[in-house]
Image (cartoon, rainbow, N blue to C red; front, side):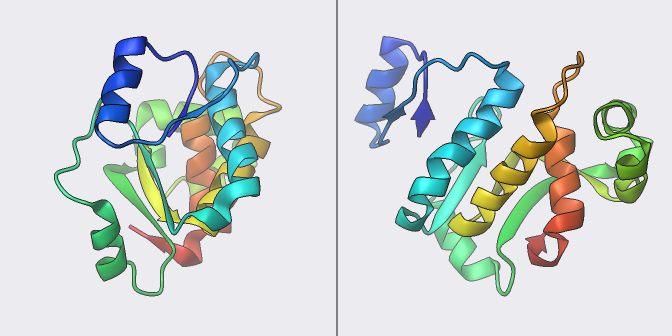
Length: 168
């Protein structure tokens, strides 16, 4: 688990439950930019050490068993899996606003009919996940506006560049 600035109690519990923690320096860039960048920077040097990478909002999700087993049994010829919201991007007010504002009208139009992909629950083979973080970072980096750029940027990457390897 890549971490920075976590509380001592949290660190102790994660280690107690068997997590390996990789401490990173506190990023100077905004959080919603930094989280994609640090994942990409770490994985570009270490992706070969992993079979699968899981990106999970740990406050929203409880794993009841080893998710690697599900990945082995269910991915088939796909390399990425992502949870969806039950609505197309253009029909969900917040994501449609983000798409038009962060990605621009042309890119927003490319993904408007795709289901909203949950930015807090996705996983995949290490090489493809490294590419998700890389391409998402490249889209987030130049954005300096008021909205968090990573979820809609990840949606763009998965709905366009990586759609052929995506299991929804």
